[in-house]
Image (tube, rainbow, N blue to C red; front, top):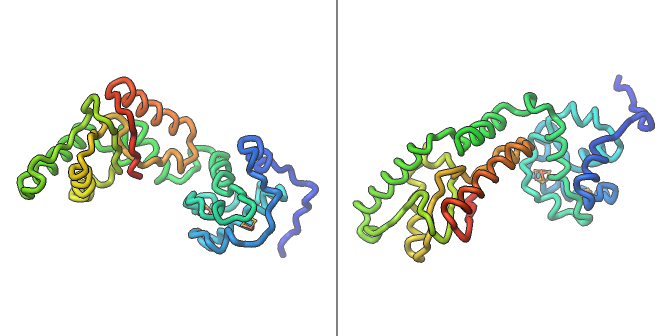
Length: 239
Ligand code: SF4
Ligand code: SF4
């Protein structure tokens, strides 16, 4: 038989933590309407229910929340907060719950991708020279086979380009032909752009891991390269 919880014995910290970091999080305003749960793509995965999660945090059931993996099935899509009549920021709550896990206990796949991104500049661990080689090879193939794009220009680290564009690192590895369509659009509209060679990947698993330090490191390296080596005025994040 389940043992009832004594709510007045609980010591909530998630709620205080979230309110400290996100003062507008207004968790207490929940109407329990269920709109968040109704539209949540993760709803029912491992029993996930955003309304229930929020209620548990409100009641200070931190230990019960920690026993679930719900924070890790949330996609952080933001659908709940957009639909919520009280604008309660559940993704921020989820982010803080993730951050409360010891790093070594967070999901291995996300952690590995975050670590690779920190180490190599992309979540797939592609060496920079391989990325550049693939880009040049695919571009050459397009120029040779498609007369309309015989002047297609694709560069990496071209100083002074107006836009720096990042790239999901899965495509150069598993689907290099998928690189071409965006290049063709950019070519046809006359865009002045380049890929950066530093932190060139658009994905960001450190965000999903709730690794603030890793996330900050990636962004600082990226911004430093864009500002100080390339001088691009605009960054386009393709993710
Ligand atoms: S949509 Fe907002 S108000 Fe409704 S149950 Fe979810 S969090 Fe509460
Ligand atoms: S952010 Fe998370 S909880 Fe909210 S709708 Fe998306 S998956 Fe569900």
